[in-house]
Length: 85
Image 1 (tube, rainbow, N blue to C red):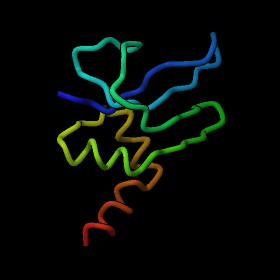
Image 2 (image 1 turned 120 degrees about the vertical axis):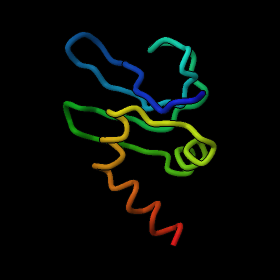
Image 3 (image 1 turned 45 degrees about the horizontal axis):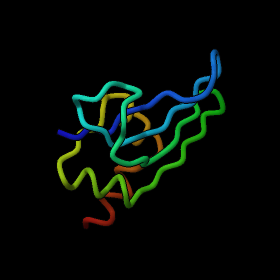
């Protein structure tokens, strides 16, 4: 099973995260299938690769709770509903 989850990058006390598609059996810093976004909680910046995220979601990937909240704040699901209608 594939999940969309955060992968920690950066340095001590200055964490930034990549949003990645990764197998559930992999550890947090393990090898990812594809990088689909970027999240900086300090600057509150988000960069998303929408086609890649849609690709994995359509094939059954489940976002973690935190990634789901990031996508919701970026209004990702509003855009998805608009394209499906």
